[in-house]
Length: 354
Image (cartoon, rainbow, N blue to C red):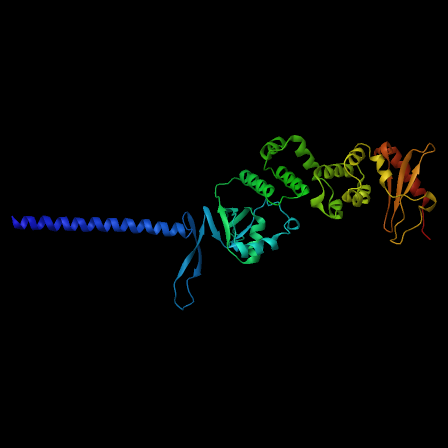
């Protein structure tokens, strides 16, 4: 009888030990998972790359861990801007200021990223969706970058997030916005203007202005002293004038437009009737019009009809001469017979410079 009791006690003791072992193992697993979560390695990808644990010879190496979800701290060196990034460096002038803030106060708002793998850039693991300036500042300050990793974002969702982020922070110029929307259509991110306008919360009229502004010639953009100060409507009207063949006049008037001397209703009137451009262009008396300035360029010379109606303007520089027809007379340049007569007249001159 006593033997039976002894065996029963032994079995109970063994069972208790196994149960305790199981509970201890479960507890250890939970703690391990919690430690991994705190280390930012949950839902992480383990790459084939390794980093040394220490500097002692023979010290084993551990895999580099790249988190794939949630808010984590990552090395900014393994990030790059995504293909739709819209903020040019010329509109990220506060990088130095933000880098100093990171050193002083740390980073509060995370950059939004997606995991990415590119065989041509194996070191890159994340693409910056929103937070381009924060990323640049982290690189400059040589600090870890706080990111919000969102692996399931579609391109459209990412595009919308980028737009909202930039509008809430230091916004972009209207020209940069215009180029952003035009590219989204050109590359098929949105199937139609209506679809893009709805996604961005714009009216069709607003989007049309942005898309018109995006057509402003590069020469005019390059001549502009401060594109961030050029409003949407102004850019749209100027692009329209350039599209009608008045790019030279726009370039000449650009300083007055940027200073605000020509604005608002005046620009609207010019867009409706470009012949009024002549009123704003610098003019000298006809007798002095052929005199060349110190810069090597003569002042524009205007020709009018016998009734005083503007006909055309001649602009002569050291390298070229331009003839601009005014108002309805510009349609003459679409008339083949007129162009043939003009060609014959030029050929008949057979002009030889002295």
